[in-house]
Image (cartoon, rainbow, N blue to C red; front, side):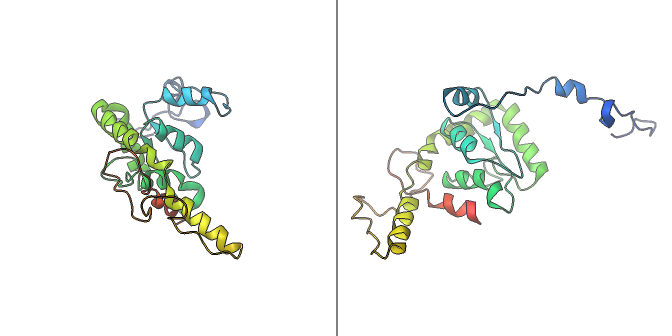
Length: 198
């Protein structure tokens, strides 16, 4: 704790923590673990902003939050276990730390992103709308499906299928522009897989 105007330190509170801990703790609600299903989705839907924990994040909470159009703030680590949120946001084209306020470079920026999204309603509405308009890209990632099919065929000693053999009208290797907010098609999600493994 910082000192007061006389340079004297504030007295530590109970448990060696700073005096304001009790007022903050009263605003924290600990909810028992929820199984997959409607209850978990309903809880996520109550959130204005979803804060990804670090250094361990998670893919289920992040993907479901993004599917609901919720802004997700994440601080990626150097390991796969802490890069799921980044990979998903990269698939949506929303991984620029300075443009969208969802991916943070450090803890200070994480806090700034979270506070802005929590307090600036217009900004939160804009970012949430953008997330909602692009969330379908998470589920229409043909390129990743094709790469798995090609890998498994090669591992089995077979010739990999062509994209045309899989019944795709266009080559999904051509990335879908994430700035195109129109519906349909897939193809822009190839960046998601790369983001998680780097």
